[in-house]
Length: 382
Image 1 (tube, rainbow, N blue to C red):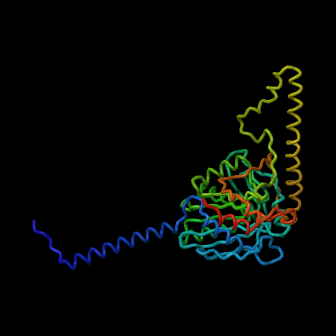
Image 2 (image 1 turned 30 degrees about the horizontal axis):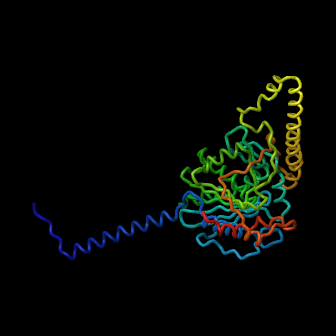
Image 3 (image 1 turned 135 degrees about the horizontal axis):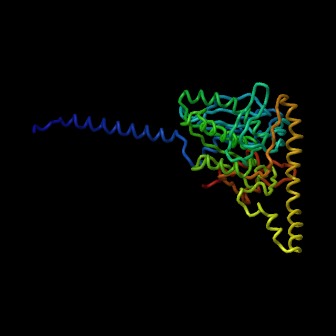
């Protein structure tokens, strides 16, 4: 067979071109990988989202989270859209990292009493159903499938108004090539981030939102937004490193709303379901003592749950209707068993932290706002 002959100079040129093409492809793949969202907690990612959160607040008297420190803007994101105030003093912002990645950031509570009304409207509703918010706006939702799953009604109202504004923006970004969205909220915004994330996944499951969109969520300093059954399904949705709850262990906001657990809040299979039958099998003295003790433990929690619905549901809804006159109060769920939902990144204060941010009876948000969270995340080592 005749041997092919390449001049020496041509061989060198060919080799250099091949190496250059290989290097270019490697760099392109590396940059592309860097531009995509990856699972797992990323403190740099969270920090930039927090910086966006700070910029959502206006320098007005209604701003409760105006930082006392200078917070730089995020280094890798540019603002795209800033919403008007909607619902019960809710607001969000859209940021863009590149053609593929964007960020949705939900504002927390301001000093506006309407925003606090949203927090205190704290009865639970089933995690699937619909809200009648006005004559022209009904919000259908399916945040979990379990019939006992329930969520905070006030933050669901906020989620409804925000989702109506967010979804067209997500669609337009998707049409332009964006396939990945970070979702973040701090405080009230963190609570809404839970519900918004569940809503977006639900729309994907129903074929109403593109299935190739990837979401990654950071709920920061979020209060408790739902019960155990909602928590189980939410944690399953973001399993694998696609969602986190970031908490300063000195912050009281993640400890509210206060929770009332009754026997109805357990799974169907439990040792308490047939407690009356167990008591009846005991001898007379033991039966009387156990029945008395059981009522003493059960009745206060049952009464507390009824009061929860009465005051933080029925009464609070009257104030909500003053702001949203056409709002139709829903039927509330027969539960007030609020739980903290993970996976949780715990920012644990030490002695140095408490020297900078000492406990205070007057400054009740000393551990909740910008400075303490940025201080702790900067020192977070994992």
